[in-house]
Length: 156
Image 1: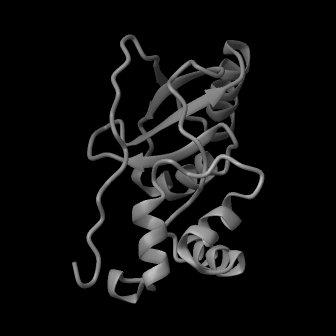
Image 2 (image 1 turned 45 degrees about the vertical axis):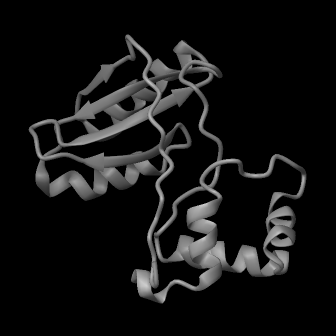
């Protein structure tokens, strides 16, 4: 789906709800009410964005180590296995997303777990399943990076 194919509702959902997402039992109904549309329209628009792989998840971002523990992980994956290994990594519930880098260590991701023992078990399982060593890079110093972006669409 190209930017020009986005509906006005999809543009608003992508741009205006990156932060301050409603924290309530009915967040999508709350969004719909604010925008003057139905909850079904909001859910349909989000489903279409997900299916088009424009979004992959909707969920909170917590300060590191606020809940559980995490580590940045890098792997040196042979080029011919990169897609398969990345798909496996993306399927793990402890991993939000992964990305390719142009480097010998070409696959990077963050593993988040409830405890250090759980985290180590996930890393061990990744090595066992892939046959590739993981390099764990735990955070030494915290930095706040604002992950919200002002997205410019069609007529802006």
